[in-house]
Length: 256
Image (cartoon, rainbow, N blue to C red; front, top):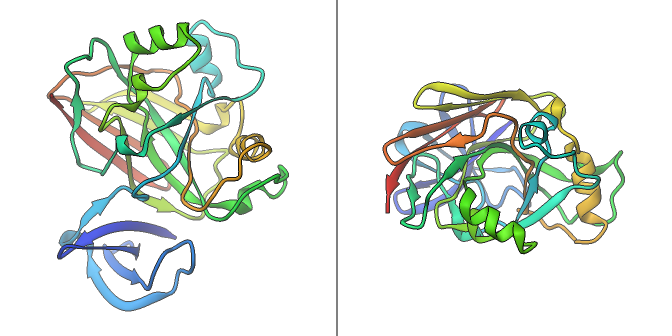
């Protein structure tokens, strides 16, 4: 089932999107119920929004074996985690703003997990039962700032600029996160092409690791890491990230 968050006539709703483009409006929050209100609309009449308005975002670094190799680093012994500000989130179709401080900024296409219920001390066997669904994210990163931050043992500003976390367009509730194709295109040219089977830490392991220490809540987001092929972009470019079974997240780039 595909869920989207959308704006129509100044009001924000969640809905179930059908293959025809018809949208069945939900009666309330999808974290409470998927019951519909009886109201319908269509995709060509709405503005598609990021699936979560103000998510708590858990980022994961070096989670694809090939990406660790291209970075010249050994696979980490445990998940490499960092928190990201929700103010960086933008909608599908919105522009990424290339900040004046930017020197080398990369795209990072990522499978993004949305937690569906309170999650604490789960097992690997039941971890995925706590997932509401999966969407697409772009973990945009300023590498010069990242290098300086990581030398001090931290990582925030490099990935936390306003507009640096595009998400969407839809949430697919029925996917196997262990075997999904991911493709990133820059101006139509394929730059990343991989499969989540290359994960060092699969989604279930990430949820177990995080929830051992932190109670996860409905609407929390895990950006699961990016595959090999990351690279720079510039104002005027268009970045498209496609994940099998979910759709395509597309964003342009403008200078600040």
